[in-house]
Amino acid sequence: MADMPFENDNPISAESLGELRQAARGGPLLVMTHDNPDPDALASGAALQVLFESMWGIPVHLGYSGLIDRAENKAMLHILTPNWLPLESLRDLQTYPAIALVDTQPRAGNNRLPGNLLPQIVFDHHHPIRDGLEQVRFLDIRTEMAATSSIIYQYLEAAGVQLDPLLATAIFYGIQTDTQGLSRGGSLQDQEIYLKLLSLIDRQKLSDVAQAGLPREYFRAFTNGLKATRVYGRAVCACLGSLPRPDFVSEMADVLIRLQDTHAALCIGEHGGVIYLSLRTQNSSKDAGWLIQHMIPSDGKAGGHGMMAGGQIPLQSNNAEPVMEEVRVKFLEVMGESGQGEDLISN
Image (tube, rainbow, N blue to C red):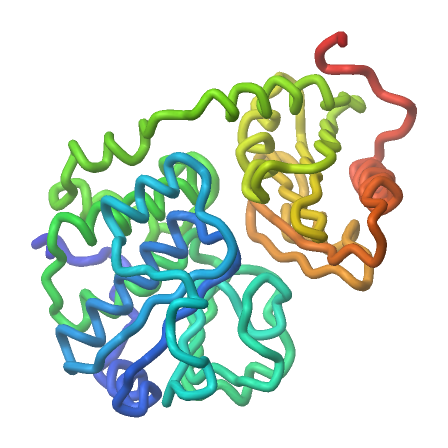
């Protein structure tokens, strides 16, 4: 750990650590996250595994659902957090004495925890906070934090666990991607943790992850995405149709929000019978989590914070276009824009 203490005291007490340990029921503990996990989710689970196994000898299994196909995320999985396994390769969820959710919540609609199972542990930083969480034995949801991995880092620090370079790099990259290197939201605590970790990370492995090679298919999809993008004043929307992988909506949104004079960028696409949304906003705009809640239909689930949000809508038919059009219209309404818009790039 870094020698310099927090300016804002670490809020994790010895009592909190004891309650967390008891919630695991002796293990093995299954740690799950949202579908198609991102770096913050992968780092959060890896950090929780180190805490339980090194501090208390409680075995932890890390199980992810969906796809990890974005080049940087795939590189992170293999280089920094290799203990994650596909959820279907692990034993039946019902047989685990305890389950932890990281970077997601029960009934959020973006994870594979069955509705009849209640996790014993939940760590998250997303809006909205779901109903029924009072039954969770150990709960730490702090929407003011920019990354779930920042929250779990505080438990490692409070427990006196020394981070090896791989875990330090994973947490650092989780915070970096959720805040765009501290430029996109984040509390003072997120910032302090990020700066502390600078002296601990493996810079070569960080580069290997952040600059992971991109396949030719990525550039084809990116070109098609730009051609599908329309500009409506301060709002930008890309209806991408069928997606090669669900996390491509977030990659496109990360790029489109950088269009000059844009206040919000929404990308929508369909994969595997589910419509995926990714929303990005600028500092001067409304909270992304608030915006997406006002454009998601009743059968969808969405959440977010600050300048990032995402959602999923299960398709009731084979035709995704009417649903995507409904979301696009609501997006323009909440942004106060109208009209036909104009193509970002002429076809």
